[in-house]
Image (tube, rainbow, N blue to C red; front, side):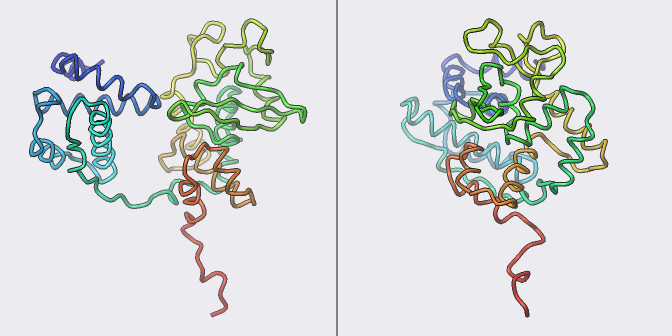
Amino acid sequence: MTSQAARSLLLVNPNDANLINTWLHDKAQTTQRAYRRFAYEYLTALGKPFQMIAPLELKQYAMSLEGDAGTVAYRVNALKSLYSYATKLGYIQVNLGELLEAPKVRQKLAERILEEDEMLRLVAGETNPRNHATLRLMYHAGLRVSEIVSLKWENIHKTKSGGATLDVWGKGEEQRYVPISPSMLEELEALPGRLPLLTRSTVGNDRYVFQGRKSKGGSIPLDTRHVHRIVQEAAKRVGIEDNVSPHWFRHANASHSLDNGAPISVVQQSLGHKSLATTMKYLHVKADTGTSQYLKA
């Protein structure tokens, strides 16, 4: 913990700290870390309890935020979410978050989707068995980085077809089932130092599939920051200069599967999108496609 973070913890009163903890308890770990930091920075900057902050103070703080539109929008939306939760809980009477408006962010999804051959080259270029399986499964199953690191052997269920179904817990503790191919399952089971796929009644099936360096018998998962490094090094290895992140693999899964004829409802279910509108974005992200390609004029 940095000295600034430690100072923020000391300055935030216990009731506000409890509010933040309950607000974040069902969110993804990466979201928890970012939102908690934003909330503590907000309360520390204003130097008063959450319930005593005036509307003008909130608006002035939001206007003082620095960074590009995406960064500011992320912080503003975090504050809006906190205020909405506090109002529903009865912690405050008026939802001041409704006064805030996040800046519009230019759609960059098309820039974050690698071509299918690029993604295949990126995965194939990784020679470390654990890292290769990590990259391949993120693309193969469209998993979030938090879902990859939390995957355990007990979450993998063999099917009659020779493949398996992953029991995945995603955002907001939402459960979904994601199928994987026989060859993907075979690669997971062949990971060096890993236990073979076990039945639920066998001791050891609660071990993490992707283990950290200091893990003893699968008790410590791979760190999300390490996954980011694995992705960036793999991209550079094959000459991809973009700032690739693990989430690009999820984007690629959606876009490429739709391009190859997958029904949009299947993609929605596999990725765990609550809204079909989210999945439909991938139907419109090709920067070099448009109606002109289908016309003779």
